[in-house]
Length: 297
Length: 309
Image (cartoon, rainbow over all chains, first blue to last red; front, side, top):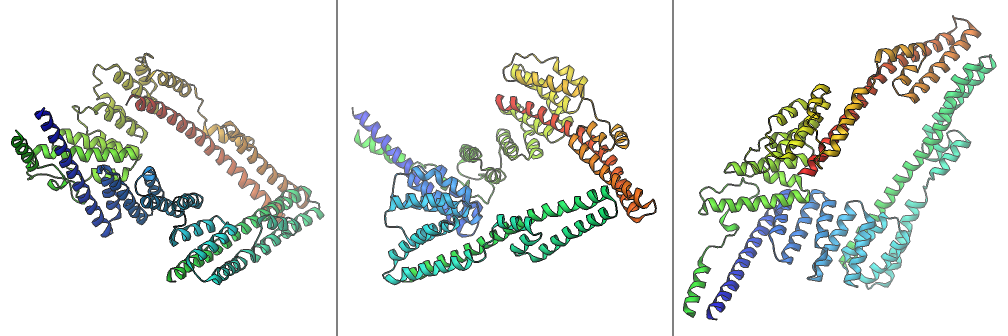
């Protein structure tokens, strides 16, 4: 009996000692990874953090390493990879603050990786877990994701909640909403160019679609080309060159005509894209300024 | 008795427990060496295995860049470790589709290694895929497949595939004579390889000369002969339209008319261009057929390798 007890004691002691050894090793590896990160060696730091994740037996150490690796990957611009790595830690059932951090980091990686839809979904999960305790950065990111998704009404409601949660000034929300509406009016509605309309205009009046899309020079060139080819057709037909009129007059004309319609549509689309980028840039600037302003209060 | 137990516990506590403190394995910027350490050979082995475990883990995750970074910093101490290093490096390059480097490393795996056959087969495949079918054949011919039926069947199939890639039908027949169809890993591919052989053998190669002559007779006909029917019809329409336009001007204004000279020149340029295009189309058609056949052969060489290993 005494020997059995002794054996058990030895086993417990050995487990404790070995576990202590692993923890010390994890800690040392983490320090090494941190120093690589601090020195700006993000690639090696990401490997070192992954090694900690691989070696660590304690979930807390693994999730910490994973989160730190995310910072290194973000510095390297590898947002999709960081997002995928963080997915491993979603099942963590320890501290809520760490789970929330994982969700936030996943959302920011999704946003930076060009998937605002996913970012918004993850932030909704974040809010569900955190209740009303979301920080400014979460509001900012959610606002950015909504802006990217062009959900202006939802963004307007979101702004109101944001301001009311972080400011005692009751008039501030109205003021910010008004400013936001102004930005949309200035940037979004004034210079809208519908590609369908541009195509229709070009179909009715050659070159007018390009002028509508803001490219008057191209519109004039296209209109002149069509007139010239029609003129050639008429001249040849009037002089009895009927076959030549069809091939050398009508042939180029149809190319210029249909090409002009297509070109007008593409120009309007390019204009819309540029307008959207300008609107987004203005909204982004507004959101960052708002965060700064509310943070200062 | 209790005293004895405590003495044992104390003794155990004083024993060095291996941790990273005792090695410099994790210094990522340095090469992994443990010479002069108090751990001795077993310590190095332990570090080596742990490092290899981590690298394999990274490879499994698809972190090939990171794996290569670590593999480049590992210094093997014996042949076994050297084999592991070359195999893993070759395998990572293979996954990255850097096939020349993959073959170079895989071919350095020694015969004593348990991954010798896998390395040789994949090295040969990498070489064949990289366009060096001759070297791939040499590698496989020099590979001792031993008494294993699977390796033997794989070797015959791969050599058959390589012969087809080189369009050496006589050599293919000699390898295909050993196709048994009995091994489930290679049976289906052996049949398909025979099908590829029949397709290659029976293929009528498009002659660029005939294509050019046909297009000289009837614009676009050479392209249709080369299997590019749509291009042929379009070519015919262009030349015909320009020819008719030139004829119209000739009929109305005579041969000295500027309009006739311009349109006739354009028609002539399109006519000659169509002939040249037909010659190119015949060559292109042959190249496309050969490329497609090569891809099919390589595919049927690859599948059994992935199934076997």
